[in-house]
Amino acid sequence: MRIDILTVVPELLESPLNHSILQRAKDKGLVEIHVHNIRDWSEDKHKRVDDYAFSKGAGMVMSIAPIDKAITELKSQREYDEVIFLTPDARQFVQRDANQLSLKKNLIMLCGHYKGIDQRVRDHLVTLEISIGDYVLTGGELAAAIVTDAIVRLIPGVLSDETSALTDSFQDGLLTPPVYTRPADYNGWKVPEVLLSGNDKLVDDWKQEQAYQRTKAIRPDLLDK
Image (cartoon, rainbow, N blue to C red):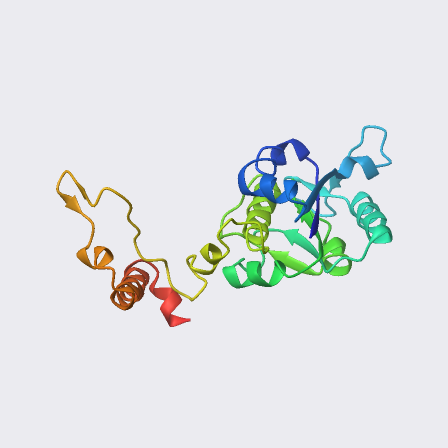
């Protein structure tokens, strides 16, 4: 997989994309992640990529020309499955989306910034819009890092134990059950006996019930779905 991220603040992505699971995925050759500064496509002598809106209101708007030129250049080099715009006013990103995107070959992610982005970018260049939640960030960079992480960890070979991703929260519509490790008794705080029983059927049933009860208590909306 290849992911190209378009941003006006590439420095914000240096740490999230170059450590831990993502770095190991890159080292294995399972994913390429390229961060591009949209200013490189600006024809303004000061490399500006924003301008005033055609209406009253505070804040600047990201201009269409540098974004169009950046996307056009990337598309001239390869085909892309999606051009993704990270924005709070979109459908919320969920595990199902991560699963589907992990099967793609090439993705472009466009990070919003300032007050907004010229609507024509969304109308004519973007193929998928993603929100990571009902709140507003300074820009889409952190959202892009989150979506990238969620996608890449699902690519076969990225995790040392590939079954780990299949038992994550939300994969089966439920939150994960509680987990424990040694020692079995710490200061009188004991691990549930069923987990020490060695009976796989009892353990699986316990985990399923715990997952259901946790979801019911914390995220009942998931059960409604």
